Image (cartoon, rainbow, N blue to C red; front, side):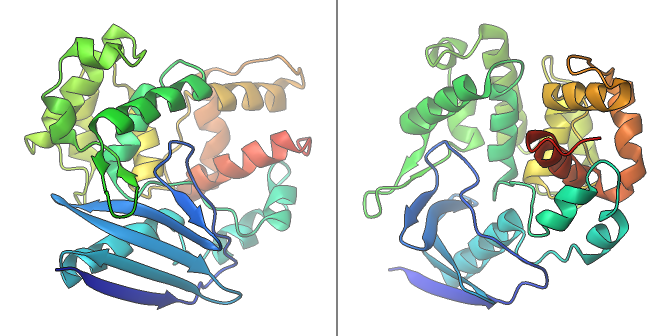
Length: 290
């Protein structure tokens, strides 16, 4: 027996619905975006439709509680409830991101409804080309993710499903051996409850994850930004930011900044550093940087 739960949201700030990943977890059906959302050990089928002034969410799962939790997770992932008025007012004339802020007030950070999913992506994306990382992620999902026969959708593998694998099984998907060990150790920490990725205070979990060889600030900052909704975190070691900030600071197209310089650059944006980073990428891609 399944239960369907619905919610209607009127976004407080301009909003545009997008498919935030290329790993096959999302699917478009007309104007709707669909995916499976994990709630504990249960899976919930969710759909989102954006209208002119409202966004409709629906969730079908084993209970009303599971459906409501899945919708909360998806609302957080889409950023539909966020009001960016303060950010846009403060930075609409910023010399670096101001033009992008004025042009795209609806911009959100692309987030995951499950922070474990964000952590897996961060670990698999370390120091390799993004396209190659996406292939690895799709292989992991296809082999160990949950498959819903009714909808044809797949869910990302839970930490418990990864924790029981061997390094060789992960290496078979083109994951380097040292990164396979990192992913396995992180999965064990999460599956055994030693790291609570949904904790109100995530910092103890970040510290425990950073004790794992192969996990440093960039990985936990990506987790914080894309899995835990922390706009005050910026993955300063990201190669894209190193290149963009290097160009801004020196005026040389091929210059690269130090990680400390990237942190210093984004410090001006305070609690909005993560969102400012997304706008800086847009400004760079459109040739709007001074």
